[in-house]
Length: 462
Ligand code: MN
Ligand code: MN
Image 1 (cartoon, rainbow, N blue to C red):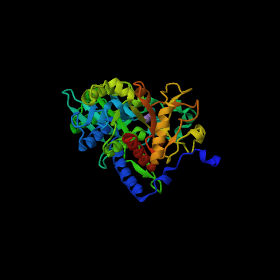
Image 2 (tube, helix red, strand yellow; image 1 turned 90 degrees about the vertical axis):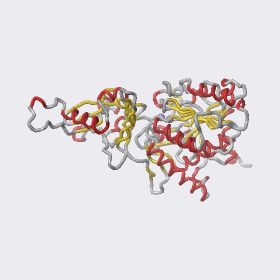
Image 3 (spheres, protein in one colour; image 1 turned 30 degrees about the vertical axis):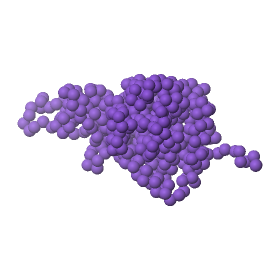
């Protein structure tokens, strides 16, 4: 044996999946993924999509038939499929998040400024503000009327819909701004979305003093009320999100990348769902937990730090556990915190430590820990669990890689792993690499999407 044979380097997944049947399955999968990404741009839309596909596969809110899905306020969802082995052996759980960075409407959003009516926004999650300027935006969300009825909004996606936008400063007058730091040059309070421009014109013969004071806003309110049944106060009890308008697309002459909004972390929602539906008769009970609020710290009733998942485990223990306590089942469980990793950026290679950076096209990526500045805030996976996982994937020929988020002391980030670890589960982060993460047009590799489904499926089937 030469010393070379004990060296390790990750495998390029394009070189692993060369068989025609793999390439055909990859094409069909990516087709479904593009449709999903194009349609689901909010956590509510994502949860509704998942529920629909699960319902078609026989899942219901009852534990009776071994296929259960328990939604939480339309923004979070627990799914489980009973295995043939006793629940006391623990669950194979995958957790992902359905929320994505965006611009939320303020609760009193509508303002009139010279010649336009705008919506004031408060951004959600980590965005680079300049990426949201001068591009078409769509509005997705809900408004709750005073009588409790829900108005659902999806505007800016159909060919015949209008879109919305935030104007950017012209270069001719940006000399002073060009000298500012990026942090100073773009203010949150300037992320105002143009909603309208034409004034309400008083009927002929009306007195001049009867002209509305804010004529453009008045016209906008008029349209909102008569075309959409929305009054200004309705925005108070609303969750309206401005998101990039338009469809997810294949990128490159070889069509080997997917470009689209919200792939962090809908790529994991989708691939984990595909895996869950593809497993035939699971040995261990398998579960999928979809959370909201990850991008703002996982707090709130629908976030990972809530007790919702624990309550679901308690219900599951009662239904399927043959007297086992939920706490014991959780302690025995294995979990993947399915989230994306930053791909090595070809134009900013210096921010990565290349040997420990994720590469597009090299399969889903493990992260043993997240956090920043000396692993602060990380739950960190056990060497034992990582050993078990790599052995599983090597035995199945599934390509995988392992990385850290950027160079030490250059920043960092977190995932939901620590909330699973808090219950004593074995947990590690695993997910595809994404380029341009948190931008309006994130990039992922087609082969990584395919490899991630294989990886999640193998974990469920183990
Ligand atoms: Mn994420
Ligand atoms: Mn994120």
